[in-house]
Image 1: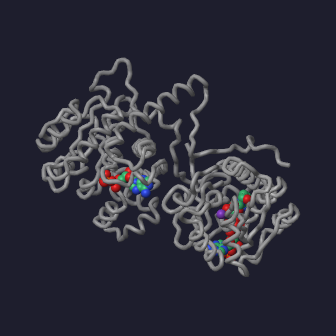
Image 2: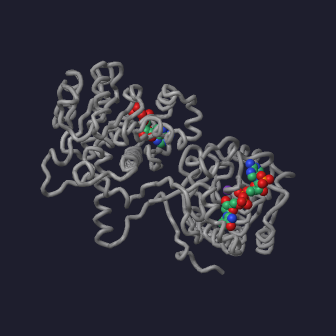
Image 3: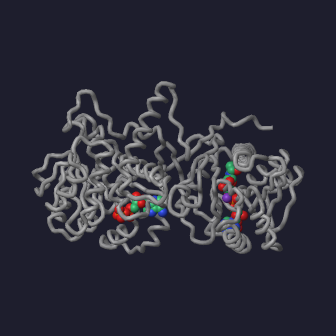
Length: 534
Ligand SMILES: NC(=O)C1=CN([C@@H]2O[C@H](COP(=O)(O)OP(=O)(O)OC[C@H]3O[C@@H](n4cnc5c(N)ncnc54)[C@H](OP(=O)(O)O)[C@@H]3O)[C@@H](O)[C@H]2O)[C@@H](O)CC1
Ligand SMILES: Nc1ncnc2c1ncn2[C@@H]1O[C@H](COP(=O)(O)OP(=O)(O)O)[C@@H](O)[C@H]1O
Ligand SMILES: [K+]
């Protein structure tokens, strides 16, 4: 599990260490972690470190200090390092170390064009303009450079490896908002703890991969945004017991699809079956029942009512359109007291007073409509710019758990627990892909251990965690299905099976070896695992 904290909370955790005079040591640890990541990326991607062209973008504060110290270490290993100083002041000790390692410096204000070309022709650029002390987007010459650099490196031109120091400059460390110009990275090396701004909205898009360097901060105060890693998924996925029969494994009721949109019901059913339920009971029009049974003969289909169907969880809404019977079923499902996924058209019937076991799964457009109906004035752009804030607000207003879709999918519980998953691929932005996410989540709601075991009380935030797990499986399946070219959502159920099979095999292998499975996207380097400082 990765826990991310606001920049403000990380600075509060640093405070006692700074007061005790440990500031320089913290900076050396941060700089060493950054240097080690840069050296590794250069060796992996370019095959050499000696002679590599490295540009350090260095701002006025400690973020620039970290980047300059890391640049000095690269210089001592033979890289040709140049620092672009974006401010009239620089961290004095770091600048001195950089120069004494043979680093060349250029002042940005007098040479924006030259500096932009220098960045574009580099093997590696370290973005150390702004860190947790940044306010708003980049300004002045730094903004000009960022704009021109984006133009030069777009399309088929070869691009340098971009590594952000702590966070991409111009991104808000607390929220992930990017109100002005900002830089983007292939990798963000972040210090002490991940920042929430790397987990949501534009910040999550700009961060690239994330590597956390432990600099010995200890406990960070405040509520974390969590991200599930591979090892965290196993306890949340269906796992039949030797004594199970089909009903005890978990039955999912699906009230989705209509004569106008039958496909959504087929996709949701396929995804739920691939995730592993004991049975799908489908309720909807006869024409959709026939279609579902052609694709999935095992689904039990009827035109009946929600209160009479014996199930462990509900999924309502995908493809429901204006079908009145489906509307009634969705309302019955969300007030049944059972766990329920409320997706697509059904989100427009939501009223306050729901419980955390109801999971709403809007995209930004659907959330705009919901919040507006509940009296909150907001635009789609505002939600896309600050998804953490609005997912949490919707959970607060409805009492339900909210899964807000996007590049990083945010899940928020009404008691405040929040998750962010970013395994997805933009190929998942396709009609029908949300229906499969709803199917996966429906299956997890029906089969989860708290639902199956009457003695287990779901802990606070449990449904947000299950929703995050569903987003993770969906993202992993999307990546797999997109390997063969543009993704067709109807290919997702087969990919879900493969992903779940791989996860089960990984779990078994790591159980035998006695260690946690590794996550490829996220890496955390503990302080005591860093090589000794020289
Ligand atoms: N504390 C520690 O011990 C450790 C800290 N660490 C590192 O320090 C980083 C935080 O450092 P920091 O506090 O110096 O702030 P930083 O992000 O470098 O920027 C501040 C400077 O930028 C300026 N500025 C602000 N906004 C601007 C804008 N939009 N456009 C242009 N300029 C703008 C601002 O000027 P001001 O607005 O105050 O006039 C000020 O001069 C943190 O991210 C991590 O990398 C690690 O080494 C571990 C130990
Ligand atoms: N740019 C993107 N990158 C990654 N995933 C995305 C992106 N855009 C959308 N997605 C994912 O694709 C799915 C689309 O869902 P949705 O818009 O509800 O589709 P539909 O309702 O047509 O099935 C969501 O899981 C969302 O998180
Ligand atoms: K930075």
